Image (tube, rainbow, N blue to C red; front, side, top):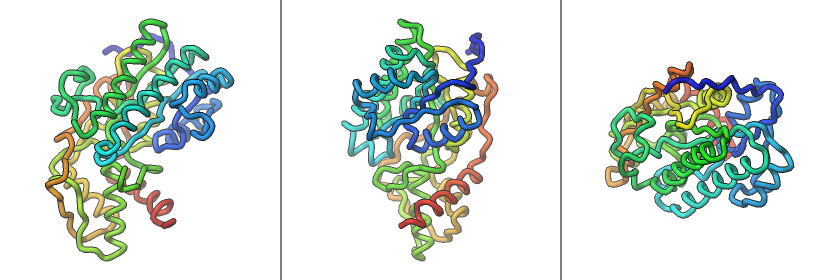
Length: 320
């Protein structure tokens, strides 16, 4: 895909709304935007529930943002997806529908929608290109979330085609970093490993239990790198096709666990619970389009894990 022929979209002096500013991604976007000389807009969930159309439209009409990062969502790992399917599909569809339609009706801002690599088929050829979308069956354990995210991509494309809206979509790989969710009932693999391994080291336990066989491979992107990529795309990209955001490198869950153990200083073993689901066997994004546009991730996995663990130790483990 060639780079956009549109002139650069400048953020300086503009009002920029970060929807979902309280989450891991939203927090990172707000931090990154502080270097852009723009006015950052946020609104708490208690004041505007993005699932409520009237509240969304009223807020947009009153505040008139000129750029929108749509990072809000109901998210979680395999267990959360598997046990709360109605929440995952309803919440995420309603959020994107209300914000996209509201932006079109009330302010005509440029909008960047944040998807997820789980939109791709479970057995998609690796690394997964953007063309893999809708080419096969989804991973059953997170199909509800994936369907909502696919709907969001198509919604942005539809409004772009019919109304000429400058709506774009980015598909990040698996994320980790500061402000992650460390609730073991809802967390993804990195925060779960960090929390369990830290607890084992502190208690002197000999082992840590890990779901699955340890064989699946995952690509992991430090959240501050994602935020930088999203600002880059907001400023320089304007086309219908969604763009993958990742590192282009993956690691097995077993090797990831060993790396987490080294970062934390845990010398015990990992017990893999093989009767628990693995999820997709591999999830690696083809990031050549983003690379061709001029952006690459800067944080290697071990350094990112050290930063993530430091944040967990200072902000979560130390408060319990």
